[in-house]
Image 1 (cartoon, helix red, strand yellow):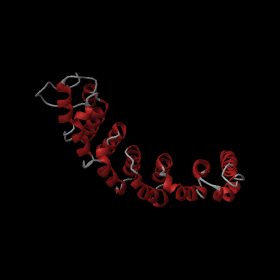
Image 2 (cartoon, rainbow, N blue to C red):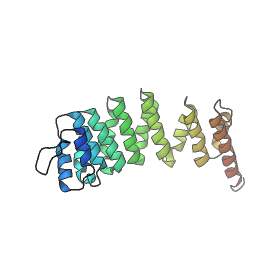
Image 3 (cartoon, one colour):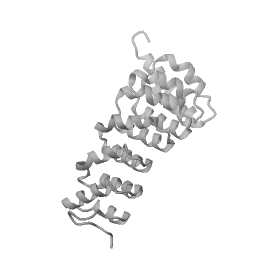
Length: 223
């Protein structure tokens, strides 16, 4: 027995029962999921939000998912962020952004990933500040990944300068890729330094960027 409710009955009270609702397409399943999202047990609420995210008509309960961002349980909040990222629910942008100030490292990290899916260019200063200042390395790395994916062209140099001196080789490699995509000859001195980097992937990316930037410059009038 999975403890699945019928329309108008009690919500399911097991994780298995709640998860089974995600594969049911009848109206009663959505009703039962909505009820399960209000159960006192935080872990059952978390499972209910997860199941709503998986349900084909789950977006009909987006108000419940948005409300879950303010849940007393960080487990529920983080699952709501994951559903919002999955749905790319842009109307959740501001409440998700507010979670970037959470005291919980795990919540900040999942909120950053969610912001990355509903990004607006005005998010850059805040996510960049998290990349440079957050006390947790995993949070900083999550911010760096989002910045690399969503970098506004107007801010590429800010990110290039930061990535160049990052201890993580992958970020130095990303600096080279930014220069390859956006820069003029002003980055060639730094790229030349990176072509001697201790990491082979960085050296290869830097050498490729030097060739690309140099070729681009030679094709300009007077180049």
